[in-house]
Amino acid sequence: MCPYDIVILSETNLLPAISTSELGLHDFKVFRRDRCVHTSQKQTGGGVLIAVRKQLQAREIIISECCTEAIFLSIKPRANVVMFLCGVYIPPQQSLTSYIHFIDTVVDIYSRNLDFNESLLCGDFNLPAHEWTESVVCSNSPSATALSDMASLLNLRQANTVRNSRGVLLDLVFCSSLTSTVSAATDVLISEEAHHPALSVSVELRSYPISSKRDPVLVRDFNRCNLEGVRTELLSGALEVGCLESDFDTAFTEFSNKLEEIVAKHTPWKRVECSPFPEWFSHELKELVIWKKMLHKKYKQTLNDSDYYNFSIIRDQCKILAKSCHEQYVFHVESTLPSNVKVFWSFVNQLNRRSPDPDILQLDDRTVCSSKEMCELSADFFKSVHSSASTVVPDYSFDTNFSISSCHLVLQDVKKKITALDASKGCGPDGIPPGVLKYCVHELDTTLQVLFNASLANGIFPTALKNSYIVPIYKSSDMSRTIVP
Image 1 (tube, rainbow, N blue to C red):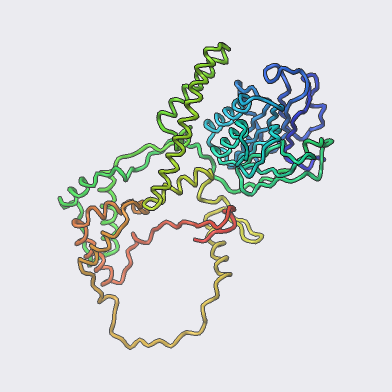
Image 2 (cartoon, rainbow, N blue to C red):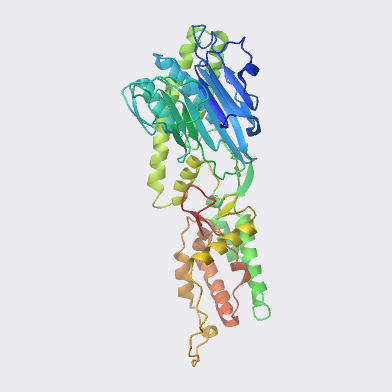
């Protein structure tokens, strides 16, 4: 019985006359790309096969333009997890064009499928004279450099360190997960070749979002809020405070809701949707990529040399502009880090392609998935790592006339706190961004002083201020196991 969930074979030497049913992989869905006139001038040898267990829901990504012996799959090993899998064979002593064709195909698949949580590219790349360290290659070869650039662009690393009998790496494994491991296979399915030792690849699946592809949604664009419009409406007396003596909590809630309505009235909507292009693509680069695809399609239909020349010119321009756009975006992220850390974390989340929220939470042998159970499990965890409070009640002296109700805030205190707010931060559950409070400080300071003093005098903490966001901080790559709120 096969112990593996996925089997990838290169140089299968299979012919169309050999039926897949003859291979004995009855529990697997088998995908083949046998050698043909479109991939090689030779009639024998070569070929790639990928066998995936049927319960993993694999489907082939059809690429009509690919001239490489390669198979591209999309696999759903479990709910909310989509994995990109590729098996490839590139014969020895191939030109740079063969590698570029393969790389362009992979990048094109990535640009059209943004819902991949993990990626795994395995195959015989036949680059024996090059040393690999993660995704970085120590070589002057244009082919090896092109593969290294692809790995950097797609945030992949080369994980295979198992050398063949000559001490070189012909088979490469590019993966997106930092926890994936590659080792020499102990349970070999077919006879090994000295030049190609059998490899065992282990991929740890983490918790992922349902999908990065979602329907467009409308949200408030607080960066374009008409602050002067909010100030004008506040000056007109649109924000009035109710009776504080009879029901302070209700009056504070009404004040908060009314201010939220005024802010929303002067804040436009913006459409948020998932772009088929990476965030760092400029408008010019997007148009150039679309134009390149159109020219490539035309060349495949005509096989005309002039059409290929036009396509190659635009393709070269795409590469140059893509490198420039990526460098500019990274520079933008680094330069805005001191003033706006959200840009940096947006960049990190895009690289990781994962949601900030786990689908499950684990503690020892317990696994939970609902919000309530996660809170209870977190409480149990922190109860176990923190010492219990002493049961001995200290002897306090309450001989004092001090009362919190006697505290009084002066106008300068309120104004000082409002002006110290960070206007670049987002708003909380109340829908009132700090930038509005800071801009309208002179219109709000007196009202807020009255409300806060009434809160102290009545000994009531407003219900409207009890809602907040709790952000988990993850201490490792496995979000389901290490969380500190």
